[in-house]
View 1: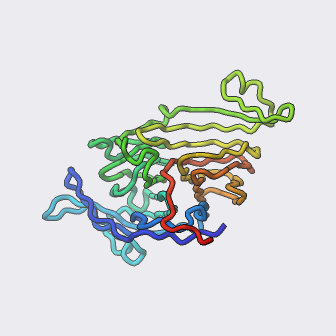
View 2 (view 1 turned 60 degrees about the vertical axis):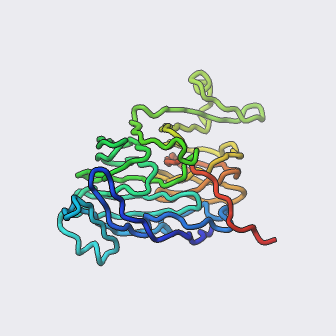
Length: 311
């Protein structure tokens, strides 16, 4: 499937926080989209090798205006950053209804320093650190989730962070900062199989106990917060799953493990770790799990085209 080139703005203003920490203008990969494409249904799959890759460096600095976090991007500028800087790689997946960014930090290149700007949700895929939650710094561990983080994300070791910038499922009318611990995520197990010519679904422990060995099984850890959620899945080999349609929101998905085949409105794509998928609102979707696999996802509001399709 062909990826339509994203149209997005290239300006993010300096962010001034109550802690007197501020950031310089960010790179274009931090920017918001300026307008929706005329046919947003085309933008549903971005493989890892088509993501926007950017090298960045951030570091603490002092100035007459107070403590600051300086940021530069691009290889030529990153090499000039001070030895104390956090040097990291960012991959951005820009869809019509939001952006997924994956940040890779290494202890040997300064650990983790990242000024929060437009992010609406943060998932700590690997490693640990701390970030602002409702006005105070909070320690976050691997597999913890923060909605509407703030301040500066910090950590001393290796880390991989998944960040989303989306409108949210309720257009931000309930946008409140919150940390959801991995232990507090709601685990839901399900299975589906064919029986007597009909598709059967099981969700309760009793139903799952009766499922055959070849049932298509799924585990979801759901991180609920005001206005949205993040879903972390373990998809066991099997399929095809039952088609699902009619969703009122988009799902922005980042694959973290295994191989899956995804079908959306008659189009098929093979997804592997590092690929991103947008399940568009109103579309029909189903999966074949080619092997045990996993992904993380959140919701965003569907987009209305800015111009009608040609007849």
